[in-house]
Length: 366
Ligand code: V47
Image (cartoon, rainbow, N blue to C red; front, side, top):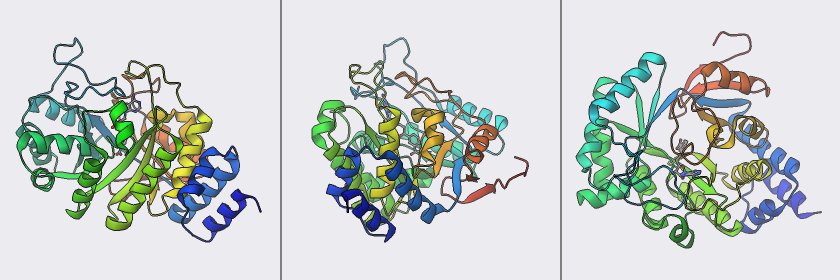
């Protein structure tokens, strides 16, 4: 039996894959077999459903003290594109978003690490949005931002999260994880939270009853082993807390970053990474194919490789568009439903915690 057949047998029996098996899969070019295997896991977990949500991204500021090499969004305060929203501007975006899409369920709020805005600036915005739109789920602040808030406020991570939770924060997005390895972080994002700090925030959030997502930014300076170690680190924490909802592999976009010479990952590599993530992360319910970073065609193909969630309508994306992404800034609900339907899956609008908002059976109006 070849090694892949042994891996297939393990997966069909529901057995956990090892680091070595993960490395074998990453190095293999049998994409169709790997994709099919990952798809069998997806079907076990979410049958023929594919999820999306109606959301809106808000980035409060791009002024950043960390200025990571991987990032084209953050800038200095005196850069021509520098901006920071005040509370009224953030509220105005939330109001406009609800006006444009009354069915909006989620605000995804992340920002740069502003050098001197106090913690109260962020809590005030969360509190004000929550007061005006109590049924909107506020998914905000990456673990990296939480570490920054702890530093500027002198509070512990648990205190920061508790204050934000009281203000109306309901869950955390998965950004800032990059590769959870300090060698890699030293090369691509040396000034921001370490791997250990990122993990500590996720653990603390889960212990406080806040669900989080996890991302992996790949396709820059990391080795295959560092990618697989990243997955296994997340899998171990998920065994401990069960607090992760979705895993989101993010292909690196080099344009306008400090790593502009890096060759961007290909469709082949992206699909394999999604499939391998589905196979290694046996304790994650959802693998998200973020269409904005993958492109719509690859996101659609990813539904045959283990992905069961395409993220949302988004409306306005800044982070990866600063780095050369050519995808649209947002997508309509009708378009996302149509592209899921075309693959033979059942489109399901979800809320942030995967509660089903609307199941789009064939022939039913959107
Ligand atoms: O944290 C930054 C990444 C992330 C680049 O949790 C880049 O539901 C590619 O985390 N090329 C932000 N990626 C996006 C993110 C996210 C997106 C959608 C859904 C969720 C979720 C989370 O984007 C950053 C960083 O890892 N990023 N620069 C770049 N040049």
